[in-house]
Image (cartoon, rainbow, N blue to C red; front, side, top):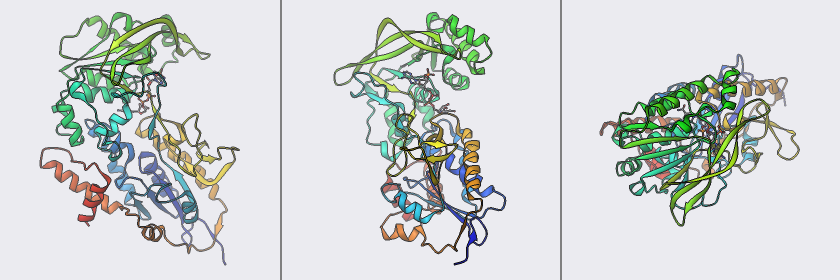
Length: 467
Ligand code: NAP
């Protein structure tokens, strides 16, 4: 049988991308942009709807950030692109199937789980990961069974002070009527309308200069007229180790801004309004108090010490404190979850890789034709845009690996027939487009951006009706 160059017009390359968040779409875009490469991209998502964390993670009051999906919609319009929603790797399709159907596989599965605190009392009611809370208010079908009893919660401790901590704090503390026009899940809006939460205590393990949030995220909370941001002079103090770090020029620009903002807060003194965000620094939770429901959190104080690079790190000291809280959200980072048949680094919670080439978990050898992008590749850091250069870099490796590859004309059966034979009710990008328009129209009737259905069956049923 004659051999044809892989990626030529006569023998386009078939690529499967697993996941449909930003890193997945940027990988598809990068593939379509490779000069004379002829490729077909099939993108799979376990949900019937695309866009990963843009739909399920970005806060409902950050609609501008969500508008990035217009770019993804254009990518999906490229010839050769297909979307298969409601198809889960390891459940509906196996890695072996992908290997049989595709020339290359890209894992763009993100980090769906969350890191655990690993302290006593963490498993009782009203302790949640921030990620669960985020997925819940964003209407992610897998998290709708959770209950957040906010009617009986006055004070919430949020552990960690990254941008996810900012998101959950803002959602909890603002007047819920501000969210009434957004695409927040109906059920979550109802719960927030009854919420008794009036105080969020942010627990940062390092100092104000090392706060992980972007200055503009904190400024957004401080700009809410019904909310005060408070810090004590002690918490806002810049210790000598942090000062040396700031003076060294090695600290990010945000460090000095965050430190100055907290100093201002402390200088303003106590808070005025009913709703307050209290910023604590150099503290770590060591135990969640309560017996069948959170009543407080025991924290240990820390001082900062420079690591080998002069970066201030916390060192616990022999000083403790108890804070009364009714709920605790842990916002200390996302974590990847293993997928059957896909290598996994349990320590990092990522797919082991060398610049995007997947490596075998046991012997570190390159797994031919398998690649990884986004958080599954580098861990849970960076903004949506960070994924564009990251995906491009992986695609560059994919293209390099194609050099000289030849194959016979492609006569493999299409994956569609396999999914149909197995009775998998998959959605297409056209289904999504019609459903997307329907969600927006539904929302419009009540002055909202969109109204999301929050169960897979309901979404699929609606998609069927719209066909
Ligand atoms: P993150 O930025 O890495 O923040 C994690 C926070 O948890 C840090 O304050 C960290 O402190 C703390 N932490 C980690 N382990 C801890 C422990 N064992 N005990 C106490 N505290 C601990 O992660 P993230 O907030 O989940 O955000 C993930 C990424 O998404 C970030 O790049 C973020 O900027 C991005 N994001 C952006 C937006 C937005 O732009 N609006 C919204 C959401 C998320 P240390 O600094 O001391 O490690």
